[in-house]
Image (cartoon, rainbow, N blue to C red; front, side, top):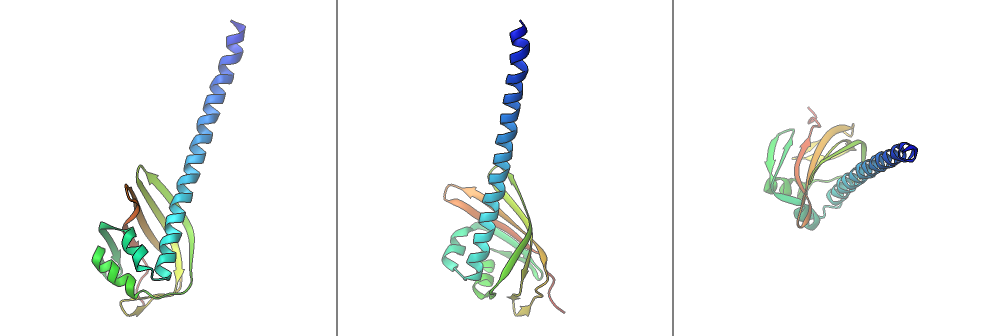
Length: 149
């Protein structure tokens, strides 16, 4: 009887600690996966790698920019004409719900969108990725950087 009083709490603690470790590892891998997707997306945009970008953009993709909403085809046209050299991502926050990764972040980038030069000041963005049978796809994006007046 005394043996069970000693062993049972140890077993419970081991199981609890193991679950916390699994949870922490899973949360870290979610952060890593989301950040990898985000950085790859920005690298592809910087390089204007349209082959990679078109494979990444899901059917039904939607975005919202300073000038309004865009669908997949409109976003592809915007990406073809996007021109920037350097970018910096900061304050990256990743959450995952099943097959969906949501990334919120700030980006500092000097870019021209639809003929308008945008400030290099950090501005918030949101990107959403969906895990599919063919890999991760970009399904939504919000660009919250105001156009210069």
